[in-house]
Image 1 (cartoon, one colour):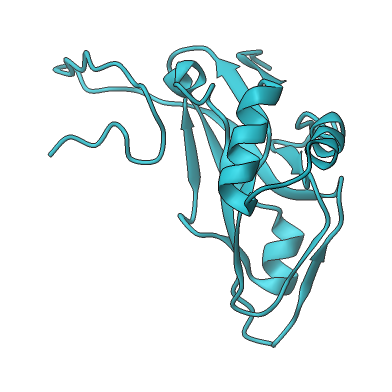
Image 2 (cartoon, helix red, strand yellow):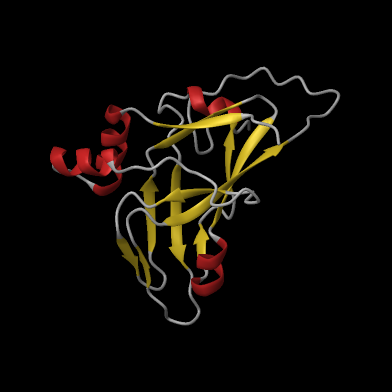
Length: 171
């Protein structure tokens, strides 16, 4: 097995900024408790391909409801690799829990972005059976899988990333 990366928490300053931007003004003590409780992603078994991401807070998602979650996590990985993020299989199977962008792509150069490479996820309860999803703090809700990728022989990309979510789109 190749070892190509490592997960870290974003700084407390970045997390507080992202939390307030997502959920509005919050008490510092509450944000401190959430930040202190963030668990780094990890694999459940030796044979697991995916690193489980854990809920920073408990929440319910009603049918059709959408929520953006600042995970408080960033990942440093070698060039030539990408982290692909998917909903946990069981949640997708039982509830049709979906990532709004279907697959989250975390590039190796995202780590150095202005927001410290903070990984956000936008979840939708896309149930067709009118099921409410209860996600408890500390439970796995998403999995990230490291994948090696290649580039074309004539690739000449020289751009430098300084953001996320569409920041590298060239028109």
